Structures are given as structure tokens and as C-alpha cells.
View 1: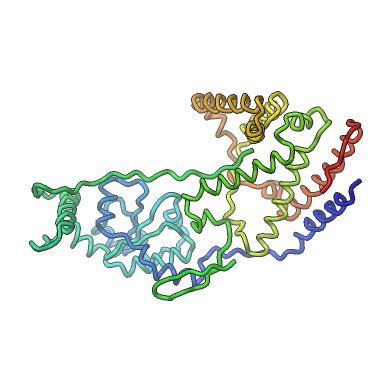
View 2: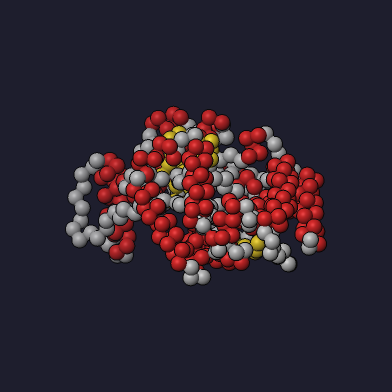
Length: 203
Length: 217
């Protein structure tokens, strides 16, 4: 019998027995401070009100709007399909089912974006992914989507495009009848999010 | 493992990374196919090098004259089990994020039986049929044709099997969780079973075959 096989047998046995002596490792589920600081410095968590309006109009099934204001303010006015999680109860057990849903993009919003940003930091620290902040909050929503201001005559064509898009969105959300300018090239494009395939093994 | 990243506000920064890399977004999804190609090539090479492209070796497990399949797969299992526990200890992988395939008991048992029959009758498993085809074996090509016909029929007839396919869902469980043992205990148990199997099958082979030659490494 080849000696190497005997050595190999003992090596495997020793390694297998060795796993009992490894200390239990506590994998940190929370984000470490360095990583959190790096992510806070990045602007990628912000979504503009234009993008949100477009997603609502297109009935994007991956969008989950979360209103972090108080219940009274939520009852008064909020965005379509938004759920209410007051900032002070974000860590409460009963609200955890709303966060961290697979393939859903949770977007926090408040009156401005300060409270929503705080909610983002807390949720990120709790380990949730795919969370965003609506830039400018509801104040920005009113200014840009509900009452868009007409750009000055000398503004670039992109700004006019955006203005027309916002007027269309305003019509959608308020039911106001505004006749669209002719020659507008803006149109809402429907983009379907690709389904993520789960990697599976096999022989 | 440490990685150097750059952010505009804070300059260069060292952050700690650990596997698995894809679920954490450290490797973006578009690399999936490249990684799959590389792993597939390595897997195919090992299958061929272990002699798995010969259907005699594979069917030999059933007839009791060649247990190389059992030994290679058991060895891979043991190395992966022990290796993952040590990787976890070194902080190279976060075991909480490792994807565990969900278990559907009845359909997996039936699938295993069908696979077993396929092994004996066809002389290949799906993976080894490709390595056999790669070295130009005709039976390998025929087997691959059968694989695709089977996939097509199953796909078209899926509504008929769907209820059975998803029955008995146990979720993403591991053996340790089911029988209430620690991962370390399961690993040691499987290792001992594997070692006994290595030596036991060697003795059986020695008795059955006259011209047996031990692989030298």
C-alpha cells in the first residue's frame, strides 16, 4: 500500500478534528464604521423626484416608497403607494418586514431629505441593502413634479424636455389639464428590470 | 483580506472584504458567465483527469469493480466541508451569506433515483457526458442529446409536475440543523464515513479485480 494514502488519511482526520478547536466566529452582520462612512460619502443613495415620478407612472413593481414622517403628516399627504414608517419606530420589530424585501428598492422620503437620510443611515447600519433616499423630499416633489417652473427662454433644450416631462407627470398626479407643447420629444420609456437568476449548482 | 478603495471625500481607505464576493456585490453580476466559464473549465479538467469520461468507471460503482467516482466526490465533499470551516475561522468567508439550496424532499428523492438509473443505464452523469464528448466519445454525444430532449420535455410538461416539484419544501436547511448537531460534528462524522468508504472500497476493488494498480501521487 502506498504510504502517501496513509499520510493523507491522517492529514484529513487531523484537519477534521481540528475544526473543534476553532473558536466560534461571530460574523458581524452590521456594517463596520469605515464602510458606512465610505457609503455616506457617495451620492449613489439619492434618487431624484423625476426618477420617482417616472417609476410611479410606469408602475415599477420594484419600487417601495417609505414615508418616514409622523403618522399625522402621513395621513395628510403622501405619495402613491407609500407606506408609513415613522423615523422613531424604524428599528421596531413590527416594521422589519417592510425592509429588506428581495428585489425591492426601498426609497425613504420626508419633508426634506434630512430625516430620510437619517433613516437611510440607520437602515444601512442595520444591514439592509437596496435602500435609497428621495433627493429633496416632498418639498422638492411639490416644486418639481406638482408645480414645475417653466425654464427661461434661453435654457437648454434638455431643460425644456425635463419641464415637459414634469408637466406630464403633474397631469398624472393631480389630474390638472395642461395642454402639452407641440414638438415635445419626451416620452416615458418602459424599462423592465431583469429578473436576477439565482446561481444553482449541479453535477 | 484587505482592499484599497478610493473615495473623493476621504482619499484612499483600506476596507476589509470577505467572501462570498458575488452576493455582497463585490463582483458585479455581469461577471457571472466569465466565472462560470473558468470554474466549468476547471471542473471539466478534473472530471477528465479523474477518468470520469469513461462510462466503465462510472457504472463500475454499481457493479462493484470501480469506486473512483465515489472516492473523488467524497473527497471533494470532505475538502469543501473542512475548508469552509477553516475559511470561516480565517475570516475569508461569511458563512451566514453562503447560499444554501432549498430542500424539496420528495422531488429530490425521485430525482436521485432517476439520476442513479441514468448513471447505470447511460454510463454518465450530465457533467461527465460533456467531458466524454470533449474527447470525442460518440456515446457522450448521444447522452448530451438525451439530456436536451429531457430538459425540453420537462420544461414543456412542467405544469404537470409542478405540484410534486415544490411539495415538501423544507427551506434552506443543512443536515446539522435538521438533526441538531453542530457543523463541526457533522464535518467530523462525514470525514470518518468518507475515510471508511475510501479504505473499504479499496479492499473490495482489490478482491474483485486482479490487475489493479494504485494511482501514485
